Length: 173
Image (cartoon, rainbow, N blue to C red):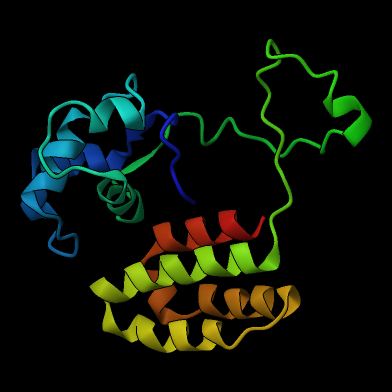
């Protein structure tokens, strides 16, 4: 999952606890910039607003790191549902007043890229993820990607990073 600039992030339960006592989470290592960014996440400001708040060096990658660590999530993450695509002839009649997002079908290469990005980020924390990155790089079709993702989700590595498993499943939906 990737946060867009207009998404509004909220702290997860882990994020709230980490803000208070980061030493309670020795497996989560974030820079002081990321900690300061996490502190100002309030569930009201968009990603763009947070990045414009004056934190020197903060960019969209910082927000994504907080998301990968499971410290933040989109405010409406649980409320999001998959909507049926709007047929092309009706798409022109949809007005700006309709705020229901339409989930677009993503190409195999876009999904594979996002999965690889997620696992590469994990491999920066846990070197054992490198073997999974190599396997996902060899995947050439959607069915094989889903099968490998299922194998990953049942692995010992995935058991240590449930947030990554959730994000992986979201990418493959």
